[in-house]
Image (tube, rainbow, N blue to C red; front, side, top):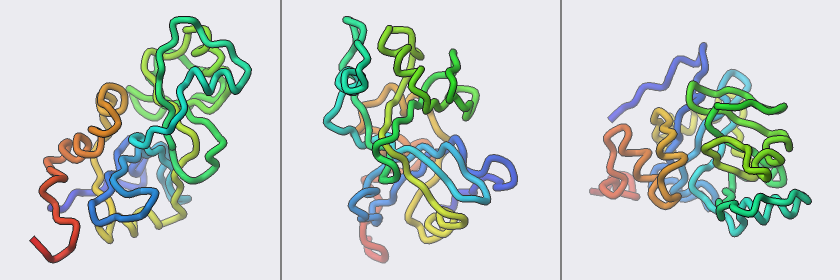
Length: 192
């Protein structure tokens, strides 16, 4: 089943999910869902949204010398990708903007500045957030080549998958957006 890739003269694959095919056995990207934040002639940048790490938002805020609000939930931080793993990214609902905010779609923004974390520590952050350390990056034409080699499926992004589903359900749920049941796809090409 072929899926069309959005017109690269506009926003390319921005605001789409990249869903790793079962055959993608890469140690880092196997069974991942990546939200594409940027895509164009210079390459692509995205955040892996289903690889939680052993770090909560509260712990991260304390490491940054920010005192979290007493009612803070134990929100998980994610491994966003192998590039600059020390750099934080907050994917969030767009009701507010901070210094480093970029609107990605009607329903999602990305912020990379510390002021969003300060607001979150005070309980004044966005209603919905996904915090990631690091990002995934592709050079010019690299992502398109990987898609052509059937390493990835492409689906329109869904905020409900980003914010409401447990991380272990996101891979299958993202594929179901385009009618694919990942449990039925063989991991070995040419074998049924």
